[in-house]
Image (cartoon, rainbow, N blue to C red; front, side):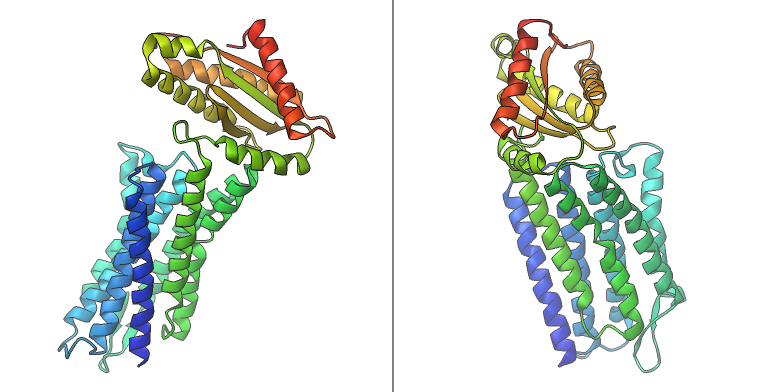
Length: 380
């Protein structure tokens, strides 16, 4: 009866992951984050399947299976898919960091796959050495010393990625993104729990439930993020901006700056080169804004206000705001390149928040300064 309940819990978790995969593929989108999410879901779906089958086979619930060949194979598949699942979660987590060993080509790809090769080698070699797990003369499943080495390795590997997310969360000014980063960073706790509970047995399938809930939260967080992003430029949309501004006006330290950014002569770009080229120009501007904001200790918030207008909200001094404006110009020049058939000019209005201002008044002040720049001397 205990084995049946154990397998049923795994089957329920498998069903949840199948539904998440189904919904994910129904969207028809293939952003980097969504691709990594599907990989993680697939790996842990296979992991749950391997352990469920192991339980059914080992306890004779699928008929009498003589020998230990299939129990060894299925448990080895369980560890292999666990290793791959954790590795793929790290790939997903690193998409939040923008710079990652998971996304480099060439020589660094060797390092990337070496990180996965170590635990995989432990699992495969165990078929001959039984240093990860084995079945004693009484057909009892027993873990060996390499099990603890493997679990600590997975915890350490994923923990490094989690620490990167927590550091990013400390720097980010968007409370919604901070919550998502912290939630994602909690994944290594599932690995730690699996290792600690191994000392008292595994009669209760706590691990698959905790991993399933973690992946469900991960998927929902990714979905909420997609809803709050502008689909073209992949910066925050106007709806998300409103919520952020309401929060930030009530919770900020020091000076609060709002940069209203408008693309000069954007209509001419559309009329001369077509709307696809206009879209490319907006993506180019958004990329420049993200690169310019990235180095700041308290990362500024970027949103597309509408059409060819963008907004950046940052906490800092006037000197830092001026530094950001220059960084935008420098980054945009790099993004354009020498082959661009036109130059992208920007007009930037920089308003400092005055206590008691409403959100509309704050934005109107930046908008007025932006038009002053546009009608006089352009920033870029």
